[in-house]
Image (cartoon, rainbow, N blue to C red):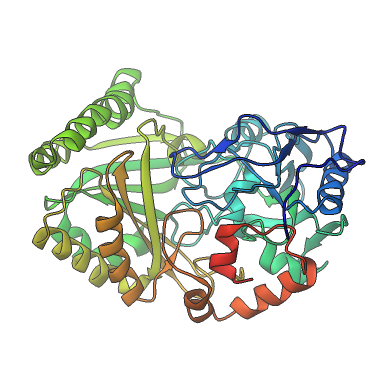
Length: 449
């Protein structure tokens, strides 16, 4: 479907010609849409979608731009969800909350806590909108609890013909199975209902651990903890581990001074400095890594979930993450370590490892299999293609599935083999959006056209 600059009569009240354009958080992709819309209601969103279709414009909603891919880029109509925010309903008895699609996770978490409620699991960043986070498969780490999308019980979306469709396991179950991680290909999400539970405490235990010990005991560490993750520092044999488990409380957060030192000074301020030095003088990176990997000391603290799961991330970076079968994690990670050690690469960012149980979402990276995630990062502005390319060859050799919102080079042919239900998703897309109103360059690559 082509693009143009004309206005649709129905969408004129909410659309303007685009001037500033769009750029994602990492600066990896930009776009200059023909026009933008900031609808204040579902009805206004429907008008904007119908107007764009009448004018031959493609349509893409954006969130906060935390995806590293061009999943949200468009030269057609860019929909900003800034006014589609807030909680529609909370049902304490059913354990559910329905929230507008543009609501930032930060606001949702704070609002739930005030109501004595919490999501069961979440990722480590909460700046994203709820719709952007679930559409790309954002996840944390968990032995039994899965991604944000796996906690959805219903969602509402506007389809290509302007229909407002509500789906759940009982209503349009085929759409529900796919749209929870829909990549923006099936419609524009307007509201999401999450399963929630009474607010609880988590005890976090963070401590350094040798790479050889972590990999040798990985299965036990996952089995013994509700949420286990670790960071390995390339050019060293050092890791930092984090174990989060439910606690009876009371809250015992880190002392403000130690929290500032660990979370702001070391993890953000000093980390920014050492990465700037490393980018300018790559030869210094191994020595810096040895010092950095010993800078964070062991600590234990207890707090409500979102204050334990999430952390401030002020140092900008680029990232690639692959999901591999959990049983393949140790071999995959050891191969990654060996590759870095025998190469001239200098890697200043730690490698992050998390887990998730199998789920039933069509294109979830954990669809149908227990999963481990390996994420590789580099400081923004650092050439990344050699490192990411070498890592990707290792990940794909172990049946890896790339995170939909992070950098990768895979295409539809690869995904057709990697996801047993890929054809199910593309057939649904053909039915809901046969004219490819919601297409863009990224979706044409990963889903085909």
